[in-house]
View: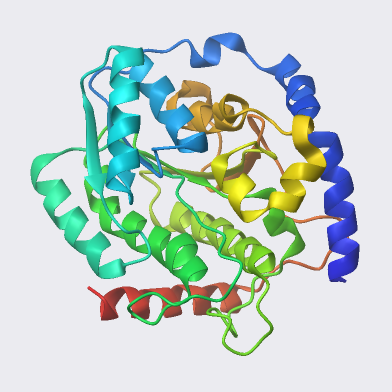
Length: 317
């Protein structure tokens, strides 16, 4: 079944996820959707020092928004912040150094953040694909800790902050790779199976889609969405998937093209009119399962995921 899913997914990707796929889809975009100014609104972008996150932060800054960059590497983050300020002319760019694989650090960060700042939009962009099983200081598998638990803790902790503001939104940068994975909660930290970083990443991205759907039902005052940016030429892809990057090369999307739907979901009034909890690609809601792929999960499986994440979140609070 995995072979079938992967073959169907790759064929779909060649049609839709490449630069030409973006160019084709963009013919249906409404240009005015992103002709907005957002002074007075605050946006948090995780992983905002490079790739899609940096492109997103820059475009928000150009439109007058207050941007909170949440990054792990101080030097790279300071360089990105300076570049965004210079090129956008917007001084309201704040930097927060947070390791999103460390739930204790995330809890402390949010506790301090909410004392000093407001927040209208959270953009969960940061992620990692570690190709060898690696544990954090807390004994958590690093992909899971960053991509799933970190997103869960940060979003859960910020929901009360977001609910106080007008038109609050949460946008999570998932991946179309999740289409090859069925939600699995039996081995969330890859302790009992052969480790495949690409498949672990895809499973994490499936988990993000499930979380988005669950949050949307539990918190109707906030507009939740997740999205696939396409196959994008980013530093993360070059580092974690060198073979894939070399194979597709010039067919990959630019960072700006990858950021387009993130920006649309974060900024456009028309995006907020879409039902909460959906999965988007190129400004359109799209199915979260491939035809005949048998990747649907039961409510019980989804509830188990939430229970495990909540137990871990509280353990490290």
